[in-house]
Image 1: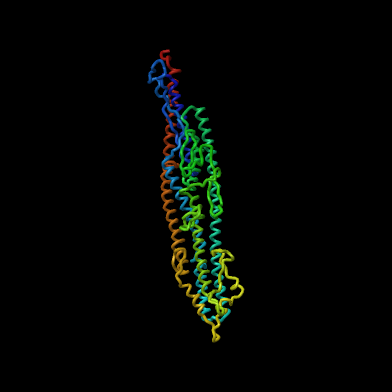
Image 2: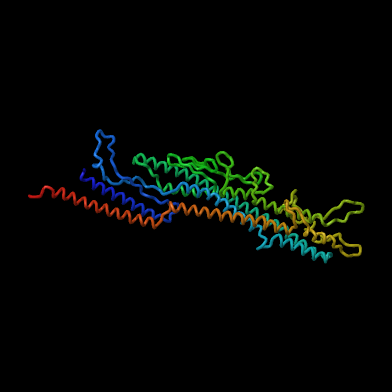
Length: 498
């Protein structure tokens, strides 16, 4: 047996344990680094096979050659990665939907600020006062002011919903830019990882474990990408990955596709592949939630790009239904006295749509006739005895108790406001909040389970540190013992009896 083989064994042991100590230190140093995966040293026992030799060697003579570092691996569980990323898409969807619905709730707030209910009450009180003083221009002016308040509230609510929509379109564009940047970076990392693997396999001729830091960066990007859309990740033989967005290839090796925001002629938006113009199909993720809230018209959805989700267009339609009924009812309550021989019934026009064919919350306004003359509402109601007839005012007051049809919902004006604030907006917010909290709980549990495998544990690294330190000291002591044995062999053997 080679006398120096033991020293080689000790040297390899020192080197292997030195690497292990370095990796432990690296793990501890990166305990707070986002996306860092715990690394480990994989070692194998050294052995020289003689099966290719003409003569079978004595295996005992080849024993005890020590250890070799096979590579630096990462401690990851691909199954937990997939489960976490699948759940992250649901978290992204419900988080974004909850955020947008909260903005809609704030825009339509009827409880912490003056809204439609207060404006309706103001008009009702003004008409009630006018019914007792039907000949007073001052009271007629108060009614006009109250009507202006309702119009202003409707206009403001419509404008607020438009602001919410435009803000979300801007936010969607920001998210799309972020996704495009991540897809490009993942493709760049695929190239860098492939080059590192090729160089390592050519130069070292050993099993390659991959450039861990680049792998960490890519995995972190994939985790972040999972919140925007439902993705699948497949590995290529060259170390690169394929990213599929709902079955559509977004990244394949060094090739990647970008997505684009398109404003359509029907006032909707779409997310398309830049290369083909084809719509990006989504089942979950924050991008889908943004599209659902921006294009969601609810049960009345009819356009190609409109969705059945209850988003901003749905709540704009709710306000439009309110405005349409308001105009229809109050424009058919103040009857104009017919001229002699004229049997046609005409009414005073109190509200208008500003020249548009369809009345909406955004275009409703006071009629020109009423704006020019506040007394317009009481003109022509002088009785034969010189008193004013308040029947028309009482008829206008009765509208507030009248059951009307609002987009399939029957009720008074006040009941309708309560309905969409409580049953529609409120329940939607609570639903998305509950789903978001549930998805977040599941996601955090999966993240904790993944971290239990992949994250750095001070207790575990401390135990490894002591283990490798003791092994290093033992290898050093072995080398000292072997050196002493060689000293005896070289300097003392054959000297006995001289």
